[in-house]
Image (tube, rainbow, N blue to C red):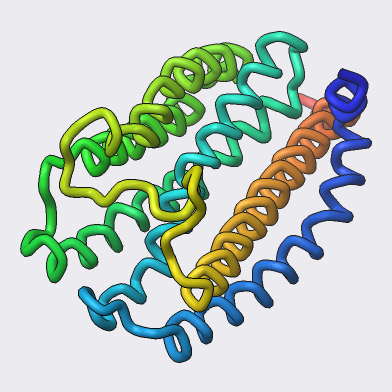
Length: 255
């Protein structure tokens, strides 16, 4: 509770964001290089899928982060509703773009992976369809911020959409358990442990760390830019306006 209210102060939050953003970018760069090099060049082939399995080092973390980003967006919207936390609104707003990018990347790489695996670029699978719905929810959320000029109304409408859209997250997560789908069931987070060999898990988790750090960096950088823009607008409103007066000229005498 105290942490939530403490960082409702834009100045304090900006100090925290300023300290975190360079660290997050550094973690992203190191983890991304490590994950891609190990995953693409040193991890073994799959005994069934061959080299096509390597796309999972891009696809799986993107799918995870698509759901995580939206969960974060919905949580910030709930905090903004309950505590009237303006910074939480900005965090939700700035989380939407990377979340939409992760979702689009997951759908694209899933199609590339599905072609050699299923024999088709796209099937109306429960997991794929619910991920497509998530992309539309992201786009609708961002459209509200762009379409509504009054920022307080835009924030209120966006919170409602964010919380309603969260219903789709458990549908995505458990779709492979609730329905008979082509998509494979969970192979990492399982009660009996992951079914993927450690040589594949290591670059997979490295890429997950890279994606998470990228999300943190991009979201916080966006909020900092928003706060600087608001501060500049407030200074412009307080600045005194100067009125230029045209000097009077003497009229020429009439004959």
